[in-house]
Each structure stands twice: as structure tokens, then as C-alpha cells.
Image 1 (tube, rainbow, N blue to C red):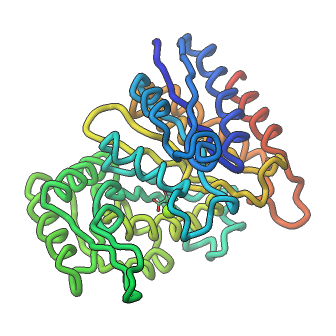
Image 2: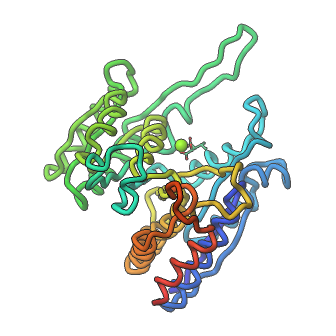
Image 3: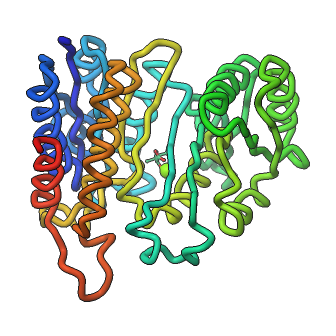
Length: 355
Ligand code: IPM
Ligand code: MG
């Protein structure tokens, strides 16, 4: 197949994990006979430095001409003054909104090879396989806001409409149907009006999915249950901010934030794919970055936007096999274990793919 992928390397470790991921994509193209055109655009801090805008119009145009977007990471200390009027993260929020990417899929699973590395007891982690579906273009991230005014107050409003909740709930229910048939909806309906609307709407959507077992958890309780009984979750659906927080918490179950991929989807096949991790400026340029989150994001791109399931599985299996062989990047190595560089880890994945 022919497809165009817009790549946005961004900041920090972003460019280095992107380079390695494109090496993996090359191997996939060869092995399965595809013709991928790779374009590139600026986003985040580097875009601010070069154009003054964290998401320049040229980048949007590049992405509009592509079948999918692969993004690495944005941000860094250079641009992190919270009072600055232009910040790298604005580029991320704007691109999600521009393309109507309202459903953010964040799968979290534990790797048997890493179970002893995670801070939770290995027996609790057995069989953990969770899909977090985070609403991505609404809620408090996109409500009304006022920066601090003269009276010394500031506000953000949390707004949800029924259609916004319905569409992300449908994504979550359909995912649950294809997986373990369970959906946990997370809210704060005991306190927030917007979250009572959330719960009521999810209950209504549930009527279309009698084969899915639905339960509700308040977000504070959910944070606890994620640590005490992680293996009992299947699909979790949550609003923008709660989903953001829960997905970082859940990443601990996988052993490292560096392992987790994500897909941000709208109502078409087009999507944006990015690792859950940030730009890790402290280790940038040292060959220490874990490229797995980015490789698995590429796998999700192949699966969801290009419908290349076998290619996606090939990448996932190659990563599994390399981990099973014992190769470790710094973030997932235990004391005394050999540490592979980003490039060495990639080479091992490529070797599995080419075998
Ligand atoms: C994420 C990040 C972003 C978010 C930040 C960088 C704006 O934490 O993708 O989870 O809050 O959505
Ligand atoms: Mg986050």
C-alpha cells in the first residue's frame, strides 16, 4: 500500500526516538511491500524557537496531507516558564483539537519479563491488560478560562455536552466488546455537575451494548483500585483530566512510562500516534531513551489508520521477543543488568523483524 505519514519529532528525546522508529518502519515497508512517504513538521519548543508558534500553519498543512501523524514529544525546561504566553504544550492541545481527535486510547499491559522490575508486587501485576479511553478534546482542558486577574483569582471551567460524552463512550463500549467485555466509567458524580451528566450519558449509551458489563467508579476510588486490583480492569473510560492522571498512574503497572503508546482518534481513520512519555530533557541526546512507547505507537498507527494488522502485530511481537531475550534500556534495567542504548535496542527489534 501507499501511505503518507507526517512525523513531528518535537523536543528532547523526541528526535532520537523518531529516527529509530523510522528505521523500524523501513523494515516493515520492505518486508510487507509498502510504499510509505514520510513528511516532517515542527511542533513544540523547537517550533517556538524557529517560528514563534508551537504549531505553525505549515505543520498543520503537512498533517492534513497525510494519512496519519506520528508525534514523539514536546516540551523542556527552556520553554517551561508557567507564566510564558506561548508554551510547547499548546501545540499538542491545538493539534488534537484541530483534527477533532476526541478519543485517546492508551493501552497498558504488564510484561512478564519486567514484572520483577515494577514497584508493585509481581502477583498483583499478573494478567494486567487495560485500555484507557481518555476523552481528549473537551472538559476542563477546553473550558472557559481566565488567567490570574487583578483580584488574584483565576479559573478553568469543566464543561461536557451529551454528544461529547456519547461519542467517546461509543468508542469505549466498542473496544470493550472486542476485548474482555467490561467497561469502567470514571467520574466524580458525587461532586461535579459535569460528571453527573457524564455518568447519565454513559448509562444511556450502555443500552446499545448489552453484551458489555458496565460499572462506575469515582476517580479517587479508581486511583486506589488501579493499584490494589489492576488485573480486574478491562476498558476504562474517563474525561480529559481524569484520564490524563489515571494513565500516568497506570503506566507504573507496565514498569516504565517509556513503554506506553497512545492513539488519538476522531470519527475517521485518520489519527495521531504518540508515546505517553514526555520529552525527558534530562536524558536527551545520550542514547538512553526507551524507544518502545514510540515503536508501539507506530504499531497502533499501522493498525488503526492504515488497517495493517499483521504489520502492527509484527512490531509488537518483535518488541516482546527482545524483552524476553533480556535486552533492557536504562529505565527498565535493574541494578547490575547490562543496559542497551536506544540504537542497540532498535537494532535488536529490527533483527527480530528481519528474521
Ligand atoms: C499527555 C500530556 C499532555 C496532556 C500535556 C503535555 C499537555 O500530559 O498527553 O498526557 O495533559 O494531555
Ligand atoms: Mg499526561
